[in-house]
Image (cartoon, rainbow, N blue to C red; front, side, top):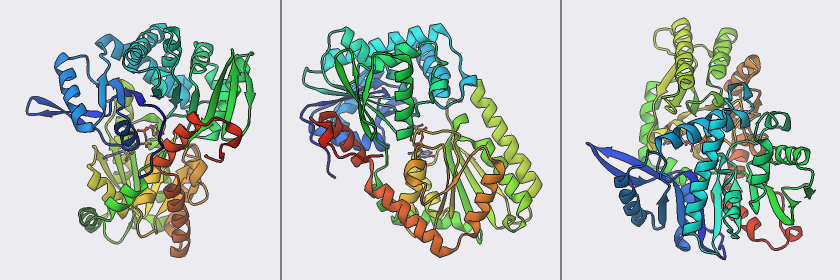
Length: 485
Ligand code: GDG
């Protein structure tokens, strides 16, 4: 694996630390987390003796701090926990992050609760992060802040006199200007973001939306360049703005899905679903993922296309998330009502239309489903990227799977040529796409999937880290190879 040599030590900062707290018969243990971002950043952090700063995911507990410190020994880089109180978690995390920025940036402004108390606590918590970075980072370190919870960190660090280079990557979409304008603190957020040296978005679409809002709200900015990387002059600073589509560790998904363990698990699952095409959906429980809309489209397909009855089964995995929030409880109830209705209406002896799993799968089981499914049905209403789409392609070793993908997933920018593209709000359109995928001849499936796998393989998670860091350190942007998105 070829990782960009940064000239400085790296400090990664995210809302959550890359750890999991495991409860072993009443005794807590901290284990290093998995996932694409950790896989990609860990070698850079180890190589340079870096630090990862973030919240543990639980209210402050001094015992946990000790355990996190010990976990640093296993990760090979230092983990620094930011203590958050119950009040911080309620107002900054559940409030500002999840009830304002998350829905607004996914174009669902009617779900936002623009409470001033959320805003003030967001600033307080960002200050805690800024202070921890100030105390732990050296003057030559490169600081890379992740995601929408921490948009003010650079601004608050500059107020403290910090002069290090600081980069920011937004994992979720940036909304169109007329939606962003609804945010009561819109100008403050944009001005704060301009205290970063590099701002990365998932797609050119997000970058364009950001630049539109910027030119509308902040008169003094001068924007240069229209390609993957632009630069913005603001109050004597020059800020780079780029599109860097995040990805997965392609090789590890391809390798692990060819393992004996996964092949066996896939065989057992196949035994339970014989002689029919499996359609797969895998999503965290979230209203942005378009699960009820997808179920309605599947129902429409069964109603209108008789040949699908008895010949396809939808396996819908819903991973529990934010279960304490009433909106998410209602979403779960709606999904379960639809599953019940569709199964009640269409089930025949020996065939169940929807297999519904409300739990998290272990990696072997997840990969087995990826290998098994003839069709992946990925229809978020809006998504920063959607890694499930890329993982499905990487695991599709026999290259005959069909990807049905929402136009509004960030992944669409790279995968639109191989996937069947759909508007997730268009029930009849998605229903037709299901029929098209079901009927797609073998040769066309292979041609499309080969293309998709090439795209995901070429721009994997290591490419993403390298490209971001290269952009951060390139002296001259005119010489920089563009075309990243
Ligand atoms: C945010 C943005 C952007 C899911 N179920 C199981 C499981 N997963 C793993 C998948 C995948 C990840 O979770 C989900 O990634 P997504 O990209 O789909 O979505 P978000 O969590 O919303 O992430 C998103 C991403 O950040 C990265 O920038 O793409 O747009 O919203 O890796 O494999 N893993 C296991 N069992 C499960 O049941 N083991």
